[in-house]
Amino acid sequence: STSLIFYSQKRKKDRLEKSFDQRPIELRSDEIVNGVTGLIGNTPLVRINSLSDALGVEILGKAEFLNPGGSVKDRVALRIVEDAERLGLLHPHTGSRIFEGTVGSTGISIATIAKARGYDATIIMPDDVAEEKVKALRSLGAEVEQVRPASIVDKKQFVNLARDRAAHFGHTANPRDSLIRSSSSVLVTTTASEAVLHEHGTLTKEEADELENKPRGFFADQFENRSNYQAHFEGTGPEIWRQTSGRVDAFVSGAGTGGTLSGTGQYLKSVNEDLMIILSDPEGSGLYNKVKYGVMYDRKEAEGTKRRHQVDTVVEGIGINRLTHNMELGLDIIDDAFRITDAEAVAMSRYLVENDGLFLGSSSACNLVACIKFIKSVGWNDGQRVVTILCDSGTRHYSKFWNDEYLQRANIPVDKQIIYDLLSQ
Ligand code: PMP
Image 1 (tube, rainbow, N blue to C red):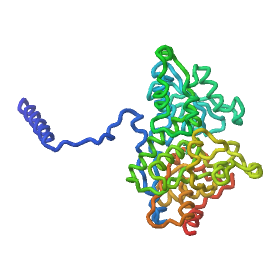
Image 2 (tube, protein in one colour):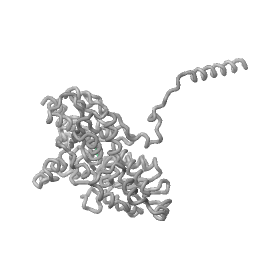
Image 3 (spheres, rainbow, N blue to C red):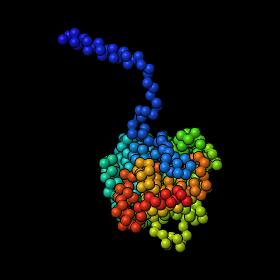
Image 4 (tube, rainbow, N blue to C red):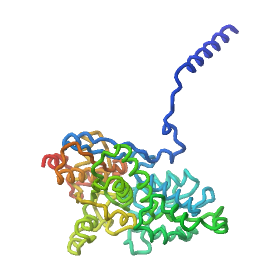
């Protein structure tokens, strides 16, 4: 039996030596990442084959649904937290808590990053959002508070309440906030916070000491927080430029906070001023009118249109009726806007499953309809390239957008033919 052991040891040794003989395998720097936050960003561009072939124009979608929290918002949440840490407004593992008011994917991203970096999270949302979102947040360890839907001017509206709760938990306004805001017309290539710190110095030692080791609240404030814009200006934009080797003719995006469109768009315009920036806007949003006619909405139309957040548009995450700071940062670079109906977005989502095996959420579908409308409007058919954002996957939308019975009750047709018609016009 000793000889058997000896024999098996020798075989092991041979095997090891053999493997050392082989050429060393080089690990690409992105093959092992550092924790869950290492999975954020650097998403691939996927060529949408059916649409590209039909149009003779390459349509490339940035696959943001591959982020660990399932959406484009992971980038934003990470940047918001990193900037707050850099400014000394958040210290990990001190029992500090991040607050956000959101109906969408931002809550999931905030909850994920909070846990990854040593914070707790409180997400405040209206009480009519899909139950699966609340479950996902609770599974991620977030505290969820649900309140009656209310207008943005109401103190009990969920965003206002999140700001309030954070203040009670010790959120002190970013001392540099007004400076960041006042420099909003100037595009800085460093982060807003770094620029401000550079100009005005960091917190004093006493200020910093006082904040350290003390549990504090922090209001993430995705609509007004410039870190949102910056995540795209330094992330999404440069990634698209690198991935296309600079061969890209247009960028199409919707806007919820405006961060994606403004940040990515400003970066792409800064490297190629001929590149076109196109807004994809769902029914009921005021942005289309703002871009086309300079007003958010005219009274007549507002009366005729069901206002977003009150009722039943099935497209979630994009479309707004007020100008947020992150939207303002990109308004002047939008070359054209297209209004997308619920029926068109629904049709696109079903068309993509049928033809490409892509199962996407409502804002991604809107963006792709806008790509077709834009390409038709400029008459491109010669291999030009259009990049858009695939914000999240269909799995986030089972209760409305991907629920045929719900759509039927809401009188929204589910008809792929709408897309074939658009393509053949
Ligand atoms: N799509 C989805 C699904 C979203 O949740 C959001 C964010 N609200 C967007 C698109 C729009 O992104 P942004 O906030 O950067 O305008």
